[in-house]
Length: 481
Image (cartoon, rainbow, N blue to C red):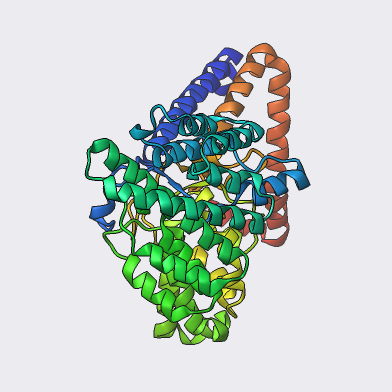
């Protein structure tokens, strides 16, 4: 009797109120998810390395294995008509070159002033013309040779030939400035610039030797360079070049010795350090590893060490396995990388994928174990376990460093939980019901009765079956009880 007296306005008010409450719940859940489901990664985590908490999240580093623009990047552009480098990346390189290849003592020297402008030019043709112009004014302008080797040479052999000319000039300039470095701040700055130029040329020559297959020569040059101590060494990270060349030689004991020196808790980590350590541990067990056998008997000590090393590497940079396992396509690496970002993962996989492939079973072990890393990380995913919390800004920085045609890998992916989606759907549905009931009260009443009738059909069907099977007096006795 009470239900029959209710008017359509009551149902409109009821559905409107429920819609409002659902909307408030949705807003609260969305706020809670934003605050706690994707927490601020600057929060300290007890299991993270405290000494690494102060490392800047989005510091961009020069790629130690960066390619040659003319001999490699430009050839890619000719083949695909796609720009492999972004202006942001090239601008960072220009800033690096200006910082290390120019100084206050260059004021008034036409050739070095030309080179200062040349590094900032976007058009490669203008840059190359400027380098030639600088050499016409002064044949001993080593930075001009560097630019020509990087951009005008179309093969590695040509680049090596130009760099050997540059090396003679750089050594001569270094000796001259070494004798006068104590004659004032300008002379000291000049000597520092000449030192940077000399080290850079030697490094690029060593990289040419590596690309041309002269591994022993490359390793010797990289070893000699790692003994240097000028400030530019902190930027170049030459030990990563040495590790890659030693892996190509399959000199695993020497690689382990390099790791022992640089895989230190007080030094910045990199994907090369972490994944090479995992590769060396995987090498011991990978060829005999079987996931079926391991699940039955458990992991041996050596297998456990390899798995832990893989988990450590994946936590540092979770983007790398998709490239090593060829789940995502590789592109040419940028000239700068973001530690723990997609750009670093591309740079590492581009050069180290062959080393994983030549080690039997290594990729199989990685495939079976890398996803287990995420079960070990505290919730939310950005909080660290073995390293400082994962940076929040990697996606934005990687989009600036990587070309537009590449789909940037994002970690962690912030997917809305089911309860938020359910609440949003419920809120929208009740709001729609309220609107339809208000506009079309009689048709909605007919529809509601029809839906209730359909929903009650299974219940009446089951009840009829029970009455047919069970005696009628049994139901009466049950009703009395």
